[in-house]
Image (cartoon, rainbow, N blue to C red):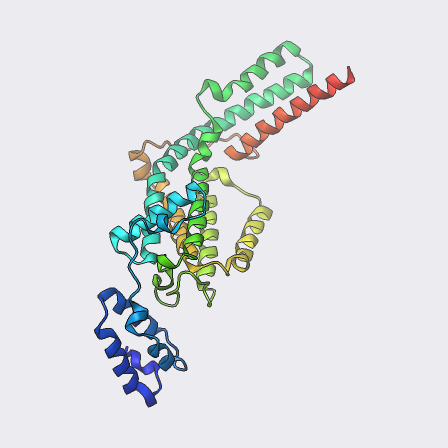
Length: 341
């Protein structure tokens, strides 16, 4: 498509001549930056934008390793490490910023993938032992209802040591998802900080309609794609994991939060949305891989045993919360008895 059709015919010749004179003395990187600015110039401002494309304006130095350190970042150490990682990847690969963010995101998610595989193994163990644990707990409740003190004490010890004797810790089943949380937080803080530093050249690191990665998306396209990807990944994981069966009310609340997130995040710089969209794609691909039969066999991930025993909830998160609430209740009862004495 001929890009000159964007300009009024009255000054096409002038625009072409000015552009040719400016581009003649520029390097390859500077020419790409100039062409992006000309391409996104509106018809009403085309002549004004071209007049600004002089060699002195386009001779901004390329980013080097150590520029962020010399700039004197005021962020905390974990965020600085992520920023230096982004800087190193951007400078060494020569990729534009949008591609650098995607590569770093995929690289870190790939590095965290073995932990997700380990969590999946533990999740299978926890889910397969849940029916037996519920049966044992039901027997304990019946024993306590009969008033059999000796048998109640014995069964209480069995319930308390059930997972310990089998080497199962419900917390391990959540490690894969929990490990992504600090990564997402640090990447968000790092990208938001880099968008405010002029030496990173984020203003020319994008493509298509979001060339300036330091500004918000004026068309709300990236915020919408990001929120749709988040809801899609949550829906997929809920369907694939039998232990994540949520009530209709909970599903409606999560979907509503996904829609409302568009209005709360639309003002963020577009580099954050490039990261979120890439991360959402990884979050969709990962459960598909983890539930692939061929991969599960290769990674030694067992199958979830379908039990005829009906349980209200087999979620490891629910199990952990129940245990914490039970301990809290027991401590409250002990303190209440001591206060009466």
